[in-house]
Length: 358
Image 1 (cartoon, rainbow, N blue to C red):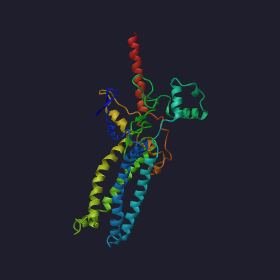
Image 2: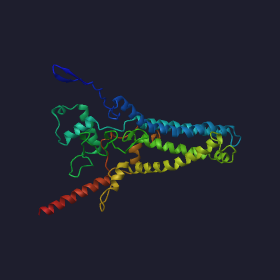
Image 3: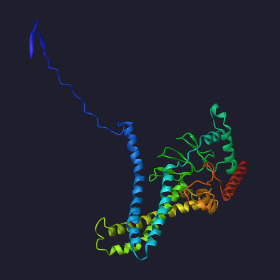
Image 4: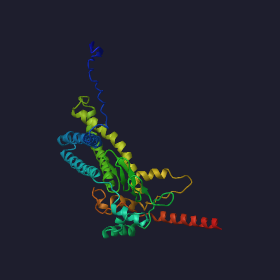
């Protein structure tokens, strides 16, 4: 509408309604930090929770159904049922102990004292603050060097020491950077989501015993459950879900399939243990150049290799404890065969250089 004011035309506008911008779609980036942390924790602990359920199902069926039938059965008698209960609980005790240790024990970080002193030993630039080194740190490094030798075995192509660009520190032999944990891990084997942890120097024994006791438990369950499995197949309620016959048949087949899959995994890690390989080192061996002789630096014989992983005392090999374990994960004893091979290569290189000089 228009109206006259002082002979001039004035326009009267109706104010427009404010325009509201569409609310942005929430994304992971916009989520509060606490919500992201909670979601990550749930995601990280989901695989271990699945492992607990995978273990708990056959344990319940075997203990409360199969053993109950064995104890009540006249043949072979209740004594066999009580023996089965004792054995299964012994296996489960060590299984759960190993599983908990493999989750809670840190696989191994590069010690600060080793990183600082190794950098100084290699002649790298170090701030003046590090020149005043604690006496106990110097003694730790000196003891490590005396026990395992002065030089690192693993080096870069140019002969310099290994260095992690992400952690910005030196990398000892057999140490690798884990992209999931975002740090270097001593004697890293692999990152295992099922324990929400890396498998490394300090928890490899627990991981190996966990999968070994899991396999032994499956073998015991399938062997001592076989008679009830056969009888349950002929039962009238075998197809009735949640009946005792159904539970026995389902659990036996489930444990048999799981033991086949886990058996291959345990066999693989037993080979690694006997040869003193890590999974990463075995992959690197396969990636070695053709036409070259590969000699594994850490293969010191089967007994020594087992002791490096499970400890010095044979009677404690099957106990999930670090009693009698060797080293600090920063240095390892190279085999005599590898040392001789390395000296031979160095001599050949020197002879070739002398010939080229002439």
